[in-house]
Image (cartoon, rainbow, N blue to C red; front, side, top):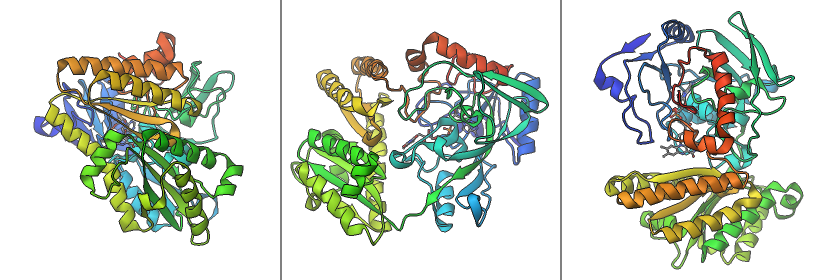
Amino acid sequence: MIIKKDPSIIQSYLEDSSNLAGGHALEVVIPKDFLEASSFLKEANDQKISVTISGGGTGTSGGRIPFGGAVLSTEKLNKIKTPASGGPKKNKISCEAGVLIKDLKEYAAKKGLFYTYDPTEQSAFIGGTIATNASGARSFKYGSTRESVNALTICLADGSIFKIQRGAIKAKDGKLKFEAGGKNYQIPVPTYKMSKTKNSAGYFAERGMDLIDLFICQEGTLACILEATLKFNPKPEDILSCFAFFETEEEAMHFAMEARDISKAKTRKNEKDIDALSIEYFDKYTLNLIRKKSRNVPDGSKGCVFFEQEISKEKEEAIINGWEGLLTKYGSSLNNTWVAMNDKDRQNLLDIRHSLGESMNEMTKANNFPKVTTDLAVPSDKLEDMMTYYKKVLDALGVQYFLFGHIGDSHIHMNLMPKNETEFTHSKNAAMDFIKKSVSLGGTVSAEHGIGKLRREYLKILYGDDGIKEMLEVKKILDPNLILGRGNIMSL
Ligand SMILES: Cc1cc2nc3c(=O)[nH]c(=O)nc-3n(C[C@H](O)[C@H](O)[C@H](O)COP(=O)(O)OP(=O)(O)OC[C@H]3O[C@@H](n4cnc5c(N)ncnc54)[C@H](O)[C@@H]3O)c2cc1C
């Protein structure tokens, strides 16, 4: 076990991508295997030392930032296990929590498998993505990280190591019952109603739920994830990736909504051969950022949609025709579209997509004020209401903003870029307004980034004090000394 006490080394574990300041820790402990992780947690639990689990540090909610105690870094738990060569296990790979998403994807691709549950940020660890139930553009077709998790090996706060197989333990009479490390647990399933959208807000709760789902999206508050067995999809023959440009934001939005509906409605899909892998939207301001990266954005465009579809040689023409018909219906055309059908061109498009985050971070630095963002998803029939509300409030606010993201999942990231204290206050008030609006429409307060330490207030709006109490009750059973992930999801 590696233990680091040098303040300059500890410093790099006191930040993530959230700008949350003030973190501090006594030491960073880096186990090399599961037994070391277990013995460290047992000792910390006996001595009631708080432990913050660290993944890749790409989180945007301050979840891995410690406020006292020790950091348990999973960086050396980084082995990928060879998948079974046949049978029902052939599309599954087991890997330890500290494996980089990027490495897992590359490994899988060599085995003919396709990992589609990943966040845009490829230096996240698999453990971090499970702990936050991360998702990405391709979650439109295949769902969030939760959908991929078939088994987990976890270490509870008392050091007991426990393997959970999906399907093995389900809640009965409102309780999840299981035995781990010689103890019998009976966990009451929280009674709050979860939004049916993509969701990374608090503990999973559902009648008859699977035990494994409790440990996905728990943000390091219930257990340390040591290893996961993940489900992969077969690697497609090819992927069509496109940036399409529209004269108005409304046309871009309605194009995206119809593409979503066709893709989700199986019978209509067959008619048009449209079955999107991802559908992303960019408003006119975000499109201006894309313009700075490429001179080929058609003049006069005010809205943009990025979409992808898995294709085969056999269906390529029909699929392209399907998309062309839809583009034309909304005043665009294939001539107005950047199309990639090979790895190099696709990477260029993805690089442009990924560079938007960096551009906004640079602007934040130049403004010298934190950007104010939301991570809201609403039910698909409420997307238009939410978009209209965003535009109405943001246009009246007068603060620079960008609206873009996973429109296929009715999940748009709102980014406000204040330049002074007054703008910052107005931006925070507007964000709170959007959060309340999302909840009133049946949406969530965090679709993919998690609650961490920065969105606890939002979680209260979603589930009320009673919902938070129910989560605390779950935590107290699994972590009675409250050592794990203090300050994440609930204030302690
Ligand atoms: C440019 C950029 C783009 C992004 N795009 C997306 C996106 O498209 N979709 C998306 O979902 N997110 C996105 N994110 C956010 C981030 O990548 C995800 O939240 C990711 O899942 C965090 O993983 P990590 O390993 O970096 O976790 P960390 O930041 O290290 O930790 C996140 C949380 O998980 C807990 N944790 C970490 N490992 C474990 C473990 N082994 N066991 C238990 N708890 C653990 C931590 O305690 C913490 O609470 C983006 C971030 C950036 C900077």
